[in-house]
Length: 355
Image (cartoon, rainbow, N blue to C red; front, side):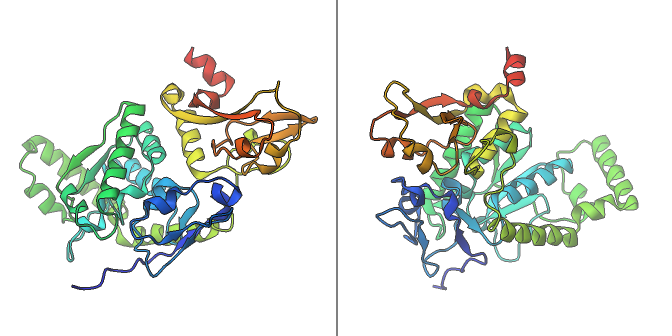
């Protein structure tokens, strides 16, 4: 039996997004790694990756913000799917286990190491944007998959189910992966298309060919260009992980760090405020009757969600990830993690419009 293919991209740990490194007891990455390639220290510290064991499945991407690739980030993946949608096409997602040697996928197909690398937050944002997306794969391959295995199949199915429940939209499934075709083959093999619609579509494609639009849309050179840009941005973001796209909602002073999944949720509710009540979040709260203003919670908060203003304790909910570190360090028991919804992220004008 041939040795399994080693991943081309290198898995990197962005410790600033690891709550265990900041003092929490989170160990989800180690629990979910199907190859036991991730080790988490008993004391506070970032996880380490044994690259001789890692097969690049990406499960850790889907469950934790601390993992990144030198080849692509989740923001790049979202941008790629959005480009397909903006080109008027349905986006198809599949995994490497479903693409056999010699099979060339069409340009609106995104091939991932494992579909489990997409988090519920990512799926929720995609569906909230009205992007037409289809999973093209045979789930029976998950059982014997050397990458994500059955766990990968369960995780991505669960992530999609959560996103569908939150948005009311649907992700379609098919066994057929669109293959790259010449334009005449595309219409000659489409038996379900009505004659009039077929000729209208053919005429539109012919016009696009004449104008160069179809060449640009299907250009492998252009696709390669985007992939190179993704790799460059991925490498840059490993050094700019603390960049905050929501500066208007950051504390006035102190540490400011927005976790990637948090940003995906914020983009979703900013675009679709009506979905906010359907997205559960965990939020840090303080019982001021118990608080003695020791401010250990402020010093320990990994994102800067807890901060001081005029020596008074403040909380920026858009930065809070519900890690629970504040609960662990508060000797007075004044801190707690409570269930809430993404309505807490809405701007005043958004909340008024919903009412």
